[in-house]
Image (cartoon, rainbow over all chains, first blue to last red; front, side, top):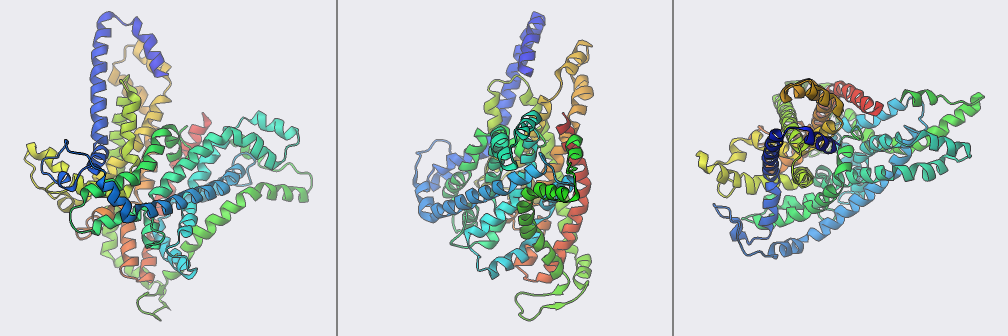
Length: 289
Length: 309
């Protein structure tokens, strides 16, 4: 919108200002690219390092020219990142499905046909997000141990679902509020039941919202570290937990470390790049459209 | 939104049908509510119960009621106060710096910059990197005293072989936090800038207002709620920081980077003193609850404002 407005404004400006405007534009462009590259540089460096031999990763003058190799990726795969990635994928996918299964009806009950005191309900959900989860880890740990579910990926599914549910409810509610009232009223007059109303009128309209919510849940579960650290060991270790092995490993393994962190970050990086718009809305829990 | 609230009152004829209508509305909410209560709230109640007990996991049979004894220890606990201070500095410091940088970046990207989409994609990348991975990367490839890039870049300025994580632990961790959260702030501020009514700015320009004056008088007031929102959401996320601290410093050296989450973790999993750890947890919850209730009031006002549009 601003671009269009600026273009219409430009021809009206005198020629001198136009020329200085072009110079300013070049200046701002260079500055923006410079700053963008500075912020991106650690990521770029990580990817570069992952294609190096270890001896090229350890140089006092950083080496930009080197013979690329896939050795580090091979090493990381034989080191077991595949199993960790499979665990992370299970925990991420199934917790996200569970969240949607619970959050879609809940958000509906807090927006379209609100229950009495819906405001309290909304606050309850967000309130749980404010409590430091570390304060509840002991009872969670003991409960899971007594159930014999330590080092079990399905424990992660349940915990990640609980972790993301409040955000999902808030987000989905903000999308549900956008459903046009008239369409709903018309469906109601036609005698549509709650379920029909939900699946036939609501879901098509809020499908992008569901996708955005799923994206946020995927990001947070894929990256989750605290539960994985304390409640998994070998069988159910997820990717972030797998990375911890690099802190304690002896000797210089930066290139291998870079390959591991690149692989670990890749799914979320790609998803976030593709869905930039949804990201803002999700992170602000629906406050920003 | 008030319109919806008014309609929440069921329009049933009799009392029975009103009750049925009430449950029909409540039904979809129940699974999520019960799930959340069981998985997140029951553990907190248990933590509250444990906080009145003396219980060390390493000493079987040590479980007994001590009343407020654990809480007396919390009040005397100097490390707890240190951790509280670290948490405040880390959370507010990182959130404010990230907000300032994010706002500047958003203002930069608001201009007609060539390849704006690509620059924005580059800028949001730090936020998408796995936090544990970010911690590892910065600790090694960036901050290493011998082979780290930060030392290399600062070499012309007389910096040589500085072990940043050891010498400036809090600043190092906060650097990573700022790096990760600046993109988040930028996205929020960008949304704020794009929602700015252009006619007011246009009017200010026609009236001959200098760019800076127009920014201060028109843009800044418009951005204020977005800044508050960014700060509050950022603080909510940053206050629970654990991954980077665990990976980069383990809370050290000493307790210089031990924030409340990490301190609770240490007390629980290194001391196994469940009663004491639980009382620390309850104290943390109370402090967080007070701060966040105040914060949440503001947030909710912001939520309703943006919804009203």
